[in-house]
Image (cartoon, rainbow, N blue to C red; front, side, top):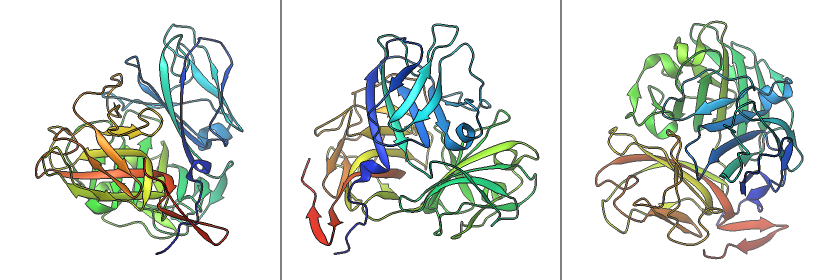
Length: 359
C-alpha cells in the first residue's frame, strides 16, 4: 500500500465554525495556519457566500467575491457589508460594514469557514503565454492564479509541477459566472459553480486543451479571459491521502454508491452534471456533522441557510457514499465531486504506517 506524505491534512485544509457577535475588528481563530483561500458561508441565515484569497490580499486589497444563485457579480469593495480585512497566522479579522448585513460576523448568525493553505505569499509566473501571479503549495496541490485577460486563446502558468485536475475560474472585473474544468468531464466542457446547469460544451473555455504540469489553457471566453479584465483561478492537483476529484453514477437507493478516496473526508462537494434537475452543488464537512449520517449540508450556488433534509452522506475511513436517493444519488445520474481529507487512510509518519480510525 502506498502511504500519504501528508499525515496531518488540517495543516493544509481546515474547517472552522463560529457564531457572529457584530464586534468590529473581531479576530476569528482556530484555522491553524494563515489561510490563502477562505470561503465563508452563513449557516443560519440566507447570506451570499464570501470568498477572499491571497492574490487580492497580497496586493493590499480587501476586495471579495460573492457566490450564490446570482453569483456572477464582479468582485466587490468593502462598504455596506462587512468584510475580512486581514488574513493572519490562525485565521482572519472581520470588519463591520455600514449596514446590518455582515458577510462574516453578523450578531447571532452561525457561520462555517473553509480554509486552504497555498503559498502564504505570491510570485510571478511566466510559464504560459500570458504572465500570471501565483500563490502555490505544491505539497497540497493548490495554486491560486491571477492574470489579466488576453482576449484570445492563451496558456497561463500555475506553478504546481503536476497537472491540476480541477480549475475554477472567475472574472473579477465584470459580471460573469464561475466556470470549472473537471478532469472527468474533459477539456471541451465546463460546469458553472453558480448554477444548477448541466455540463456545458464550449471550445472557448479551455481551448479544448487539458492542463499540463506547468500551464492550463483558456480560450476566448469573456467569462475567463476577457481582454484586460482581472481573472482569478483556483487550481487543484490530486494528492494521495489528501485530495480526490472524481465522478460516480447514482443508484437511487438508500444505500448509495461507495466512492473510494483513500482517506477519511473532511469536506465533500458533489454536483449532478447530466441534468439541471437536482443539480445543486451540495457541500458537507466534518465540523458541522461529527457522526454518520452526515446530514447537515449547504449549497454553494444559493444563499440558502443550512438544511438537514433529504441529502445525507456517510463518511468512512477510506471514502464516502450518498446515504439516500436525494440530490447526490439520483438513479442513473452522473455526478462529479471534490473531496479533502481529515485523515489519510494510512499515513507515513516518520516511516511508520498510521492507519486512520473509523468515524
